[in-house]
Image (cartoon, rainbow, N blue to C red; front, top):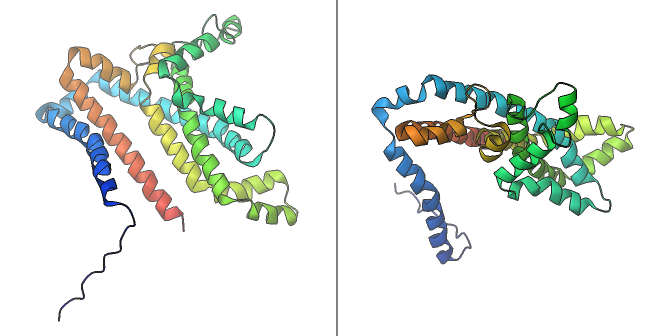
Length: 268
């Protein structure tokens, strides 16, 4: 018994589009392949388990988790206001929220330094109260939050707009207050978008470099995150830098693949 021939459904795309698409894919994959080929595999475990490397990885995970919590606390209300409000100046507000996406990270670090530094706009008052922010672990968290926050806002605002307001209107019609509607209807509806945005924010915070170096410096165990450790190792031990870079890539891949898998299962 012969199997019926498989029917090929045309994609509807011009065939020439596949050429630049393949070139784009190679542009992403080739550098990663080259890095994999450069790893000193016999010494890999030794390179990534040095005392300074483990301290940097542990600090990166702690600060990225803290900055992700901050992104959720600040980003959820921001996304809700942007998606559900209509007032004059809203486009300007949206542009300002997204500004860290296009700013060079070092510029963000300088802006934070002139805000929370010892002589900064807010920092000088904090210094009077005995609170120092710049060049501390707190500065690392703030720098990571500054660059990662737009990722959560963009993702969640898109989910809120896609979900529409039908169920919220129905709940309000039944007598639910705005806070109840937001907590019991809106947030569950956009939970996949919220999780996806939080994961993207965590990944961005984990890889933050420029703003962290400018605002927090590079003190081992205090402000030296994994990207800073990689940069320093590049000057003294290139094999260690490549091995640590691979660790960061693996963590990023696990985060992205895991979040996409969860989102695909969560969306009916």
